[in-house]
Image (tube, rainbow, N blue to C red; front, side, top):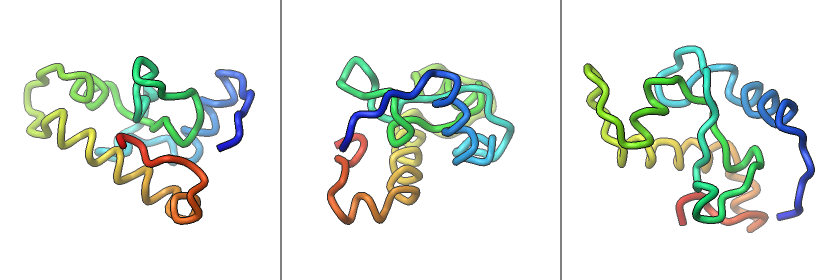
Length: 102
């Protein structure tokens, strides 16, 4: 995968635009971006490693308990990985970048 130099504002716009400005888990308006592979584990600030997410699901993805949300952090992480795999299926097929979460 080639390295990209994208400023943070442009990166946020690219990710939100790709995801139609909605949470990839619930289709509510997105307020946050979430790293599929955390930076602490080598995840990069690139569109292929980021998803648009609402505040509630961002908390769930980081292991917080949220009243009324039945999705576990593990289920949310898996759904995010599957979303990215769907978005970039052709690139994954060609081996142009590693699968998130792998």
